[in-house]
Amino acid sequence: MSKGLINEKHLITSLNNGDESAFVKLFEMYAPVLQSFMLKLKVDSEDVNDTVQQTFLKVWENREKLDPNVPLKNYIITIAKNDLYNKVQRSIVAKKHNDLLGSRHQVFEPSFSDLTKVLNEILDSLPEKRAKVFKMSRIEGYSNKEIAQELGISKSTVENHINNSSAIIKKLLKNFGFWTTSLFFLILP
Picture 1 (cartoon, rainbow, N blue to C red):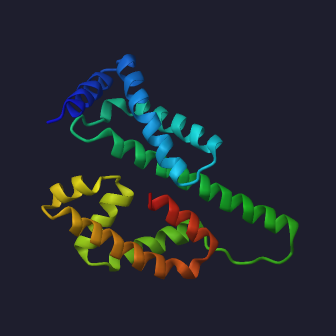
Picture 2 (cartoon, rainbow, N blue to C red):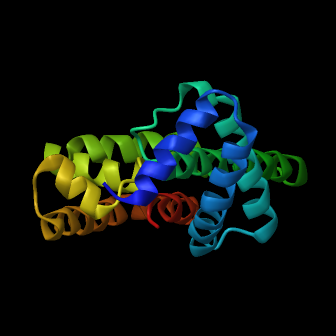
């Protein structure tokens, strides 16, 4: 086991007990990782800072529930994605309200929940292992190497599953237009 993982486990265990210095060290370790992840998604810098703060606030609030054996990176990426999903959803709702107030013509735009439902249906229609690999990678935040080890398959098989799933999802979501792009970039780093 690498020294970094041992150190992370120790820090999470200390955090479980309310150690603020462990929280600060984990923040210093993972805030740059989270910022980099979001900048790759072309997230506005103001939203990046807000999401980092919200993510680590949730880490602190749930510190007693953190499992030292689960990589913290996966947890913070998931929290950040959920925060970004919520921002996109609020943006869609605000846009719809503004459109309704500013115009008598209502144009259908699929809601965030519609897109999430369609995405889940697409994932359910994929072969079981392919869907599992995609979810572990894009939703749960596991690395390709971690997925390969967990499922007992090669890293290249993991990459093939992800690429094939992404192509199918992109093709099937194409009918949903502009908002699909936002959702798709949130699930694909």
